[in-house]
Image (cartoon, rainbow, N blue to C red; front, side, top):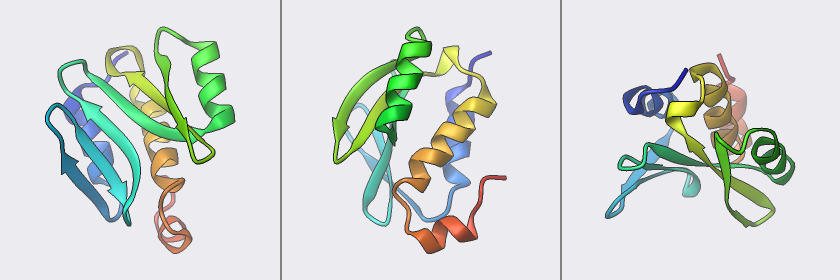
Length: 113
């Protein structure tokens, strides 16, 4: 169990039309100007956009893996600890975060593999 930072970054790179922004201590990810994720290399954590119900479910079920980051615009962001999650689950969460921000035509053209 656990996902290497390089593997997480490859997951994001496979998504369509992702833009990256570099902050002082993090990288942000967006699609068509709408943010869907963050990566903090120092802590090996990522922040991902989710629905409010998914945020609550993830944090409630496994607080050692997920924590509430914040809520905004009807969405609940979660912090994910990369050493504590498996790759398949992380890939689904990354895709879902991207899907919640991408235009519908882009989602239809790029289903989760």
